Length: 235
Image (cartoon, rainbow, N blue to C red; front, side, top):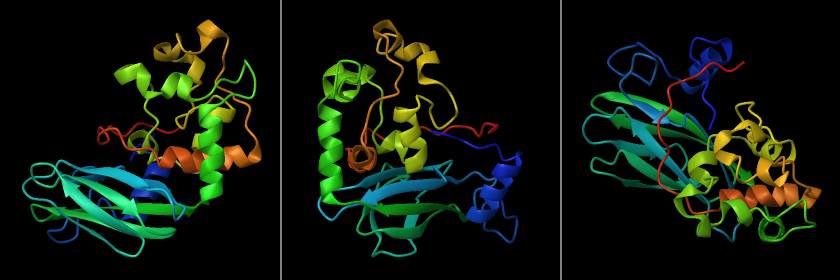
């Protein structure tokens, strides 16, 4: 899950677009000095009319009860959870873009959600590639990410992927580079899954599977809620 530095140009533009960092009046929309921040600040999911697509979000730094709202309830519904409603799970209802707002302690913060249209056929193609392999050097994704690996498996449910675009995630499994620009084979925690077997995380997928994997991954049941990350510089 990528994070942008608010001191960088990219971060400044992002904060401006999301309405964060305002010092107008009593309402603070999640800038660097704010106690409240919807996290992640930019969200991505899908909809295919058949499968459920959930998006887990948190209100970081909230004090007291949190109230949530979406700008268009026809695009996504929300289910708050946690002691004070500081967590929320969005369920997509159609493709489109909306603004999610959290309010607590007199402060507000926003995030944007973009829902991409997929088809049930694309989802099926992605699920098939996830479970099967075209050849020995291209194992099924479930080999490393399956539930049988328990808590040690790499989490690529919406809990980790809802902050990343389709293109960024596709690059992860076709080029072996994650959304933060890191080569997966250089990550020590994955050495037993990749380098020891001669894998590079650059997998063989058809064009249909490339889109289908996005539909399938975004429809996975989230594993918990995102852990807040301090912004880091995007080079």
